Image (cartoon, rainbow over all chains, first blue to last red; front, side, top):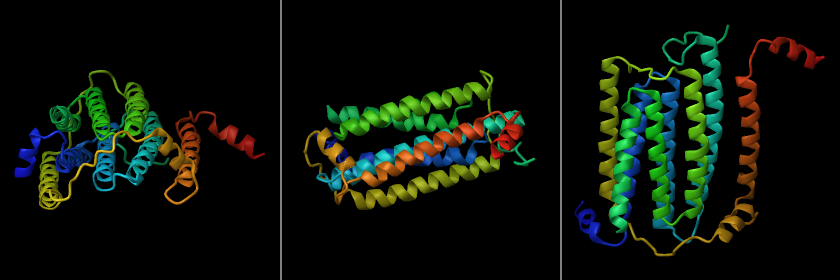
Length: 113
Length: 178
């Protein structure tokens, strides 16, 4: 922690603050995923988790292996897969809304008729 | 100067990601998520990943947020408020999240401080990214790229198929079978 405080005056940010920021984002997503009842809000929490993972990929790539770009490409593919996942999930949510009238998980007792 | 910008972005991310999972109104939650995504794009810019910055802004803050906002407008009345789950569940979730945060934070702080070294290599050339994405050699990514394109196609078809109205679905399905 001491190094963190000393380095606030330097020109480059060390690796630790980036990881702590993504850590906060990740556990905010975990908390939201467990407490929310609405399907769209649960999906927002999942997006927070995926975004935290993206930051970690980019930071580890930049600080530990700066001449390679595996982390960059993994972050790119994670973003693409998150886009796919969101599109399908929102289609399912709209379908659920059409069938049940709301998007609360507690009210959905049976999925097939 | 870099450090000041970083801490502003970090503060924005920390505050708005907590607000996004605790706010009562769903559209506010989506707006806070948008702020978090834009601040993350700023972090990518600070790491000199300009391509990742552009992708984050266009795909996440552009595309996915539009999807979210359209879905919210389709399924909610404006000004709807949401209660969270029962209080014991909220309490155990808080306990779980804070406990996990402290444990992982302890592990990170204990282990990571020694290994950082920022190598100043400047902006990554767009040409390098292009050849790495389109090549078939080692450390090049043509195959995952094509797999992602197939996945996107499957998702488009799947999303249309799922979200379609089902009133005349039985007839059209039996017609196409014949």
